[in-house]
Amino acid sequence: MKIRRARKDDVRAITAQNILLAQESEHMRLNPRTIHAGVKQLIADQSKGFYLVAEEQGTIIGQLMITVEWSDWRNKPIWWVQSVFVQQAWRRKGVFTRLLRDVQKRARSQHVAFLRLYAHHDNRPALRVYRKTGWKQEPYISLRLSV
Image (cartoon, rainbow, N blue to C red):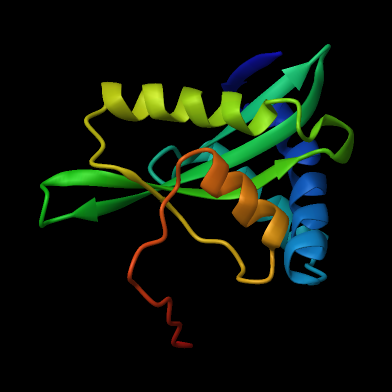
């Protein structure tokens, strides 16, 4: 298994996996054109973040996205882990752990304060995996305001 940064030619595979992720984790149907455009934008503009993919024999079997938050309290970036997906056939085979270890290595080299992620409270399988790989729940509540 190879872990690498996503490239332009990965947009279609990442888009498909994001559609599956939304359906599976939050029972949402997302607009494929919007997702495709969003993935394409992120890959084209590194200031927005980046995707890492797990690849096996030329096929993307897992992914995660990193977006950056600046922490004025720490004078360092915080990386948000998002859009985590591993294909069903590859689950429980260490794909997410390999992706996470690669992110941690990259984060240390770039002096990132720490990693954060959010998960839907009903996504129990993902929450189990996150806890198993060392994530701790923070004392914050996530809120949203439409603009």
